[in-house]
Length: 188
Image (cartoon, rainbow, N blue to C red; front, side, top):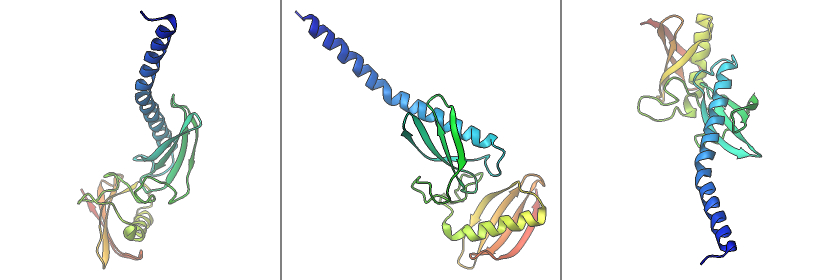
């Protein structure tokens, strides 16, 4: 026969066990809600290169989530969101400060920062990518340009950029120090 104290202790134990069992799932759900809210807010911000942003990392801090995002050109963004998705702030971060374990600050575009062989676009191609973007923007007069593919070589890096406004691609060949050697547009 169990005493009242024993019954109360057993009931409390069962309640706590259920709460702890549900907590990880609820924590993941609130983290996902915070991440999605931050991504949505960044996309709605009207800032350039935010259509295909990704979450670099998120961590719980003081009753809310600190979410680090990267836009399509690797620019970091800091966002703080509550469990219900309410945004406390969204601001441009410091380049290279993201700690997602992949060396923040890398370009990520429609194929989410991966080239054809599945590897990351390395820092060695950054000057070439930036030079090609600038050359295309100078020639086309527009900003809606996204990187589709990067092929690194010791001599020059090939950067293929998509121009949705003109329905075509730009083929850019640049030195690894950022000097454009060739730039041409190919219609689809």
